[in-house]
Length: 276
Image (cartoon, rainbow, N blue to C red; front, side, top):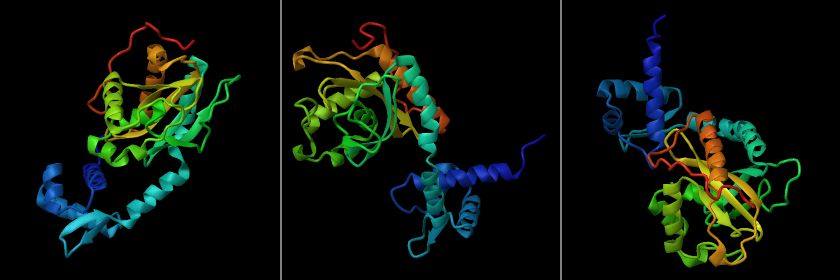
């Protein structure tokens, strides 16, 4: 059976909404038509229909368009249904079955990491990162896994001065150049590592979860006991554990309709794989 003639129009309307959602402010109809490769007449028709339904707002004085109240209502309903946590929970449970370590789901909230979920093995170690806990994003692996895929200007805006860098254990980046250096390595590698930055005696690996636009919307982390005697003796990367975590993050990205951006992580090897 052939595709309904309404389906292409629906896809175009959704493309318009996604475009508006990705802009910092209102845009002209001409810009919408140009970026989506649509005829101007089609673009004006789509914008008019979306405006009638409340999903788009026309700003006649500016001759521009922005998202409407109906789009906000959809976003609010999305948050009420907690779909990210619901989709992530079975992914985290499968991850701890494979690793035997505690798994977390975190999101960025300003320059903090907010933990939404924690799944634990039958005999877990006590860790500070419970649900609802906020940590400075530059310290936990989950925070840097997301920061590594943000534009440099956004990272700079989040950490404008040394005063933005909280110190918990004497480890971790203490200024913007140090953070940038870590993020460059972690973006290239495909996962982030922290060893005693948050709580002495614990380490973690984390990988980002991407939305449909390739933006880091969350991160999955695996946390375990590890003592790093001195800073000079740190540096373990736990590649096999990180690969398990990265696969879980990729699975959740797929479940929410997302995909990784163009910075494809390298495949990991097997040396130095497991935590002690």
